[in-house]
Length: 112
Image 1 (tube, rainbow, N blue to C red):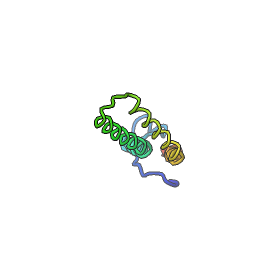
Image 2 (image 1 turned 90 degrees about the vertical axis):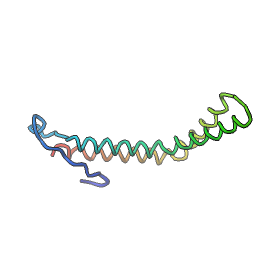
Image 3 (image 1 turned 180 degrees about the vertical axis):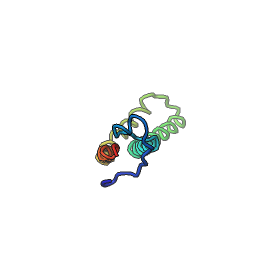
Image 4 (image 1 turned 180 degrees about the horizontal axis):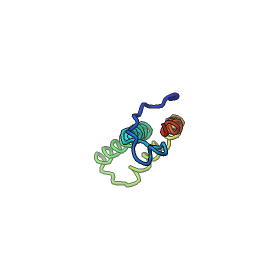
């Protein structure tokens, strides 16, 4: 295996897939799914947490001042989301690219 490739087990070979050499067991598929979910959590997490905190602060402000303006909650969230996407966007794209590269490098090992 090359580089940053995870250790995903290979299931037992049986049936037509074993004849053609393209069997991927459920343990390997679940490993890919697990890695994908954790990668998406790390990529989307910072933006979602920041938007959540801004929404909470704006909601407390609205409750204390009794201002019920709908755009007061959306505009700051969009500004924070845009700023964070610009600020950490390169890191996010690097993380997604690393995950995709890992999967592409694993394709030849699926036919073992």
